[in-house]
Image 1 (tube, rainbow, N blue to C red):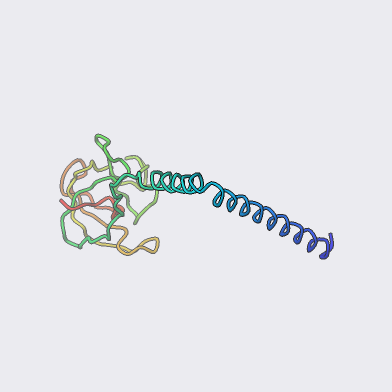
Image 2 (cartoon, one colour):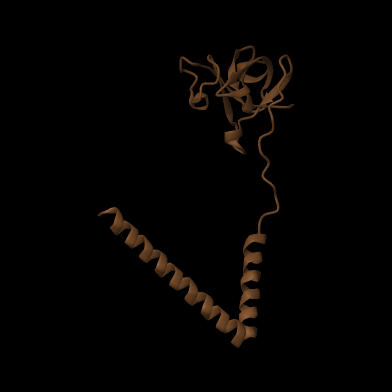
Length: 162
């Protein structure tokens, strides 16, 4: 196809679209002037449907994760955000900072230190910037539970206020 053929097809498409729009506008104008009750009733009906469709939303606002305000030396609790509502949810404590698959590690894995149960108290020893996010990873000392006195790393999102 040459450039001229493309221009012709493009112009034909424009002409067809213009003709369709003119035809629709003419029909709407005919209805508006000839049968105004039907026209304005349909317009109100469309507006009502629009408001019903877009106003019937759950008023509960989904909160975004707030800024991480962890402080070195403070005591917090572990809470696995991905296991919301699960009984005996565990958070992996690993040897290296913020291993992405830390939650899928087992006790026998060479990178895993232990699997701490939700609610375990931890003391934050160090914070580290990872993946371009400030204080995204925390080195913790576990102060209670099955991993007591062990030290390792976890995502800061796994740590909540007591």
